Length: 178
Image (cartoon, rainbow, N blue to C red; front, top):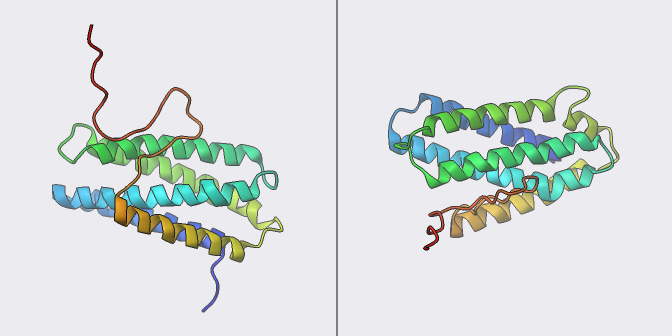
């Protein structure tokens, strides 16, 4: 069996999530939509974490920093929608719209990463980084995160680039009493 490299691992994740968004578009039953959204949010959370913890830092200073910075900000935008979706259900106002906007944001993000010649992945391929070894570390972390999610549920997203916003699940804090 051929060893997978880090870029192939990430592209495979991209195709998986694109397929899930297509499944959501075709779904009509509320419970089916909720299950698909749970899977989308899980896949995107794990994907974002392995990129932010391992992939992006590996290439800092080796490719255009602007691309990496945009990746972090795009992840944070997705995290805001993920938090909204995980705190809601298909009966909520704007639920389908939030999934649609998340899909569009991810589609844009994927195009930025996969753009031929000048995209993030193309630039990464031109570095001296061992992409097979990097994939092994990313897969190990991915497996660890999936096991943690299976045991404890999806963690609250944490933004890295947003100021003044903290993404949490659950009820808003109680209003102050006077």
